[in-house]
Length: 312
Image (cartoon, rainbow, N blue to C red; front, top):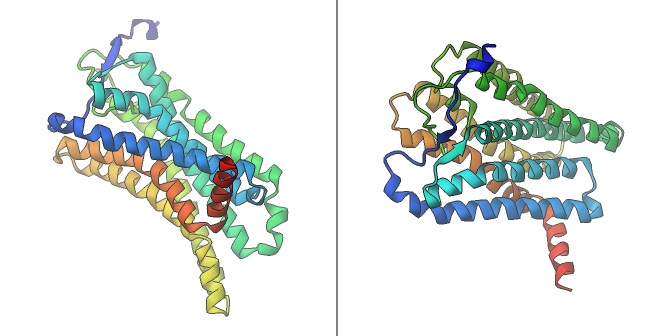
């Protein structure tokens, strides 16, 4: 009965960049370019892995999953961000906001899990190369992929219901141009302790643990690489990890920066918070295909062959 009496606004109002509204129109072009790069670059990676037989390996299957999550993240944020900045259309229906919130958090968690799976791939390839083919079979890859997807959606399934149980009887203005759980729960005129505890639990048990095991895998990789006698072989082994390391940095550095600013930068201008949040969501999908195209020879060859076949 308590849920039946909860009041919600019909819609939320999204926010562009506070204090810089007059400059928002100038951001339309760069935003469109970033979205085009993210969607186009990751779609090319997906297609290259699909059609090129030499890329039918665990490392590239994980890369295609990373590209899929980046495309999905871009599609989840694209409508509201462009509407807010291009048309100043700030309204978003309450249920639509819940769906967007769930998708953004889910695909972000999925990307974190994929980066962890990729670090495991690099660990086995370098530390136990003789058993790589038997450890990372197609069945194991499929199982890891399903586990990453299931973890994301199952862990975050309660979030929309935790928001729905809260009455929102004051302001309906969100702090970003898209919907996030911390932003929505702050509008509630009720106790949000459960939401805060669950949000912290999710952050520590998923993103925190993923980052810890990624760090641990590279400690073990470095220990194994340092035992190689030849300097050239050491550099060759480490070079296979560069793309993954850059992808991890592109994902986690903005995330940690945003979390730090939100927790300790209460007196920081609001536009700094908004800009950093946008960087966190938009930069990794743009950088990942560039990183892997530039640093991975097999990917470059596959893309070149794919476009050459298209011209014939």
